[in-house]
Structures are given as C-alpha cells and as structure tokens.
Image (tube, rainbow, N blue to C red; front, side, top):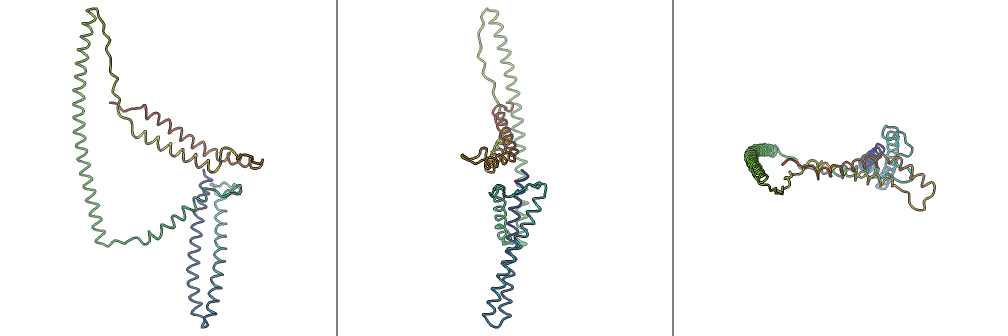
Length: 280
C-alpha cells in the first residue's frame, strides 16, 4: 500500500511540476519576445531573435522538467514509501495505474485553480447580510431542535405511560390466564394455548451503514489490487512472464488480504444487522 501511495504522489507532484515550469516558460516567452520586438529596429531581426528565445526556452523547460522529475523520482525512491525498490514507478515495462491516477488528480486540481481565483468577491454589505442570514439560520435551527426535543420528550413520556399500561394489562391477563389454567386443570382438562411470537424491535441503522461502508471499501481495494496484479497470469505466458506475475502477486498480497478482511467484516456485520434488533 505504501508503494501505491508513492506512485500516486509521484504522478500528482509531477503534473504540478510540469504545469509550473510551463507557466513560467510562457511568461518568460512573452517578456522576451516583447523585448526582442522593441530592441531591434528591423522587423525580421526581431522575429528571428524572438524565435531563438522561444526555442531556447522550450529546450530549457524540457531540461528543467526532466531534472525536477528525476530529483522527485530519486527522493521518493529513497523514502520510506518506496523503500528503495527498483523500478518502483513502472515495473515490468508498464505504467502504474496509481501514477496515472495521481497525474489525473493533479491536473484536476490545477483545473480548479482558475475557478477559485475568479470566484466572485463579496462586498461588505453582502458579507454582513450573509453573516446575518447565517445567524438567523442557526437560531432557527436551534429553536427547531429545541421544539423537536420537547416533542420527543413528550412522546417518550406518552410511550412510557402506554408501555406501563400495556405491562399492567399483560400482567392482569397473565393472572387471569393462570387462574383459568388452574380451573381447567382442576376440572381435569388441559388446553394448549397458541402463543404469539414476541414482537421484534427495529434494526440498528448504524450497524447496517458500517457494514455497507466496509463492503464498499473492501470491494474497492480488491478491485484496485486486481487491476494492478491479477491473481493468475495470462494464457500461453512465457516463463519470465509467469515469474513476473508471481512477483506482482507477492507484492499485492497485503492489499488483497486487507480488502478481503474488510469485505469479510462487512459481510459479518451485515449478517449481524439482519439478526440483532433493538428491544421493543
């Protein structure tokens, strides 16, 4: 799991490095082309100077991206996440799904920056109005919560009274039934009485939601592990490919184990949710 996190961090950080270098190169290109146009009286020389500056900046940007990516690769490779594993980003001549997912997440985060920078600014009057509305909403929620609590207390008290009456009636009926049974036994006849099943209370909602969360988390981990390291090699695979798949299986075994344990706990809690009820 730590190796997957290292690959994700590499893809995410590399996407931000590329975006930052390209943004800096774009700003420098605009500035240098403007200087070249003003510095040369001849338009042709100015265009040539601008083209040379742009070409040098492109080459320098690519070299800088390569240098920073190599430094990032070395830093993460020697960290505790990768633990010095060889070819930890793209082992086996294929690109890791975690690194691709990290790069996509970095690009998505970069895409949200313009919207965050261009968000509408609130005037002081709007801020005051929003604060007043928030205070009114909090006060309204507080009053509603107090009313709901008072209503719940009243309903609880009514339920307790009704339960006490029901228990008293049940005790009275039990005494009457006992007397009738004694009278029937004294008369020499015994009658079997059908007993209604005891009412069951509602299920425990928290237990069901926990079971669902564990099932989804375990299924996601198992699917992710299977996408990285399948359980069996492809048909007609060579001996080297089979050895490679066995190595992948050894590295992905903790992820499979964690996903299986979470899914098993989810199934166990789901079965417990079906059986364990609240008292009536």
